[in-house]
Length: 383
Image (cartoon, rainbow, N blue to C red; front, side, top):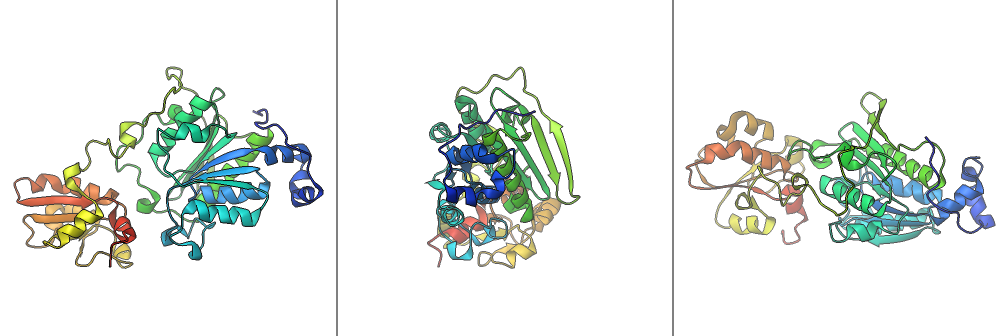
C-alpha cells in the first residue's frame, strides 16, 4: 500500500545540490520534488549505535535536511566492529558528537542536532514532537516503549528495528494507519529472556544491514514512494540469508496511549524476581568491599576473561553455575562476601538467582555487580 508523503517540498534545488543528488533525482519516483521533500525533512534518530549509525550515514547522504541524534553513551572499543560511523580516535567521546562529526563529513548541508541524554518519561514527548519521523535504533525495551507512547501522543510515525545474534526485524509504526509497537509487543519479555547484544553477541554486518533498511523506510515515508513496512513486520535471518514478512494488525481492544508509561518488566528499577537492592553492588561499593576481603566470581566465558577481568576473580562460566549450583563456587566458600559479575550484569543476575536458595542460612552476603565488568572498566577511579 502506498502512502502520501510526510513532508512538503522545500525550496528549489541549487545547481550544486542537483549535482550532489543526481543519482537519486534520476529516479522517477524521487525527482527534484522528492529531493526537496528530503531536504525539508526533520528526522529524530534514537541511538547512535549499531542501528542508528548506518542509518545516519545513508540519511545524510540522501540529503535529509535535519538529523537529530539522541544518545547518552560514549564510544567504546567493543562498539567499533559494528558501529562503523565511529573510529578508534573517538574512543571515550560522546556518541552523539562522534556521529555528528561523521554526518558533517558526509554532507555539510545537513543540519545536525545532538541530544546527549537518556530518553525518559519527562523528555521523550517534546523530543519526538516537531519531527516528521522517528528512527528508533535503541537497544532496550524501556526506550522502545517510551518512543512508542510518544509516537501515539504526537502522531509522529516510527521506523523501528531490532537485532540479536543472527536475526533482525524492521517495521513502521504509524499512529492511526497501522499496528503500533504495543499491538505487536504488548508486554516486554521477562528479565533474562532477551539478552542485549553485549550478552548474546551480534555479527557486525547485521545491524549495518537492518539500519540501512530502516534508512530506506524513512526515505520512502518522507517522499511518499515505494511500499514502506506499514502494517508489516520484516524478519531477516542472516544465518540462512532468508526473509519473511508478517502482516500485523491493531489490537481493537487497546486504547492509544495518552501518556508515557514504561511497563514494569521493562524498567530495571521496577523489575521483580531479579536481584534485590540488597543483592546488588555498584562499582564504588565493590571497591570499598575489596579492602575487607571478598570472593569474586566472573561468570563470563573464557574468551571474555582473557580480554580482562577483576584482579583475583575466579573464572566460573554461567553454564557451570547453572548446572552445578553452589558446588561450582571456589572450594571452601561456605559463606562470607561473594560477588558475582559478568560483562553487563545480566548473566550474574541469573547466577545469583540460581545460587540464592543454597545461600539460605549461610553467613555473609551473595551479591552481583551492577553493570558488570563494563561498568568496572569504565569507572574513572580504577588504577
